[in-house]
Image (tube, helix red, strand yellow):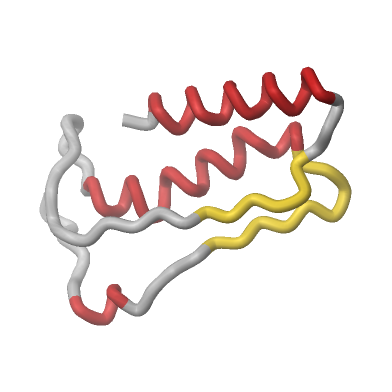
Amino acid sequence: DFGSVRAFADQQLRELQGSGRKLDVLVNNAGVMGVAAAADGSDRTMRINHLGPFLLTQLLQPAMGRGCRVVNVSSRMHLQGSLAWSL
């Protein structure tokens, strides 16, 4: 469920707008391993590791200052597994 991502983004946008500040850097550092389906049947790992950070970045764009940097942290764990396309 992306509700927590949306709630976090809303909170950050309110705080930044209230202070008149802009976001200078966003570091997306999420990661889980294992095959599990989310409540809607989609791949939980894909949602957390890829779609969640993408959504957060999109939602926070209005608060990003000129020259803002987005850093996506990853690992080499993808070498240990495979995608479960059949979920």
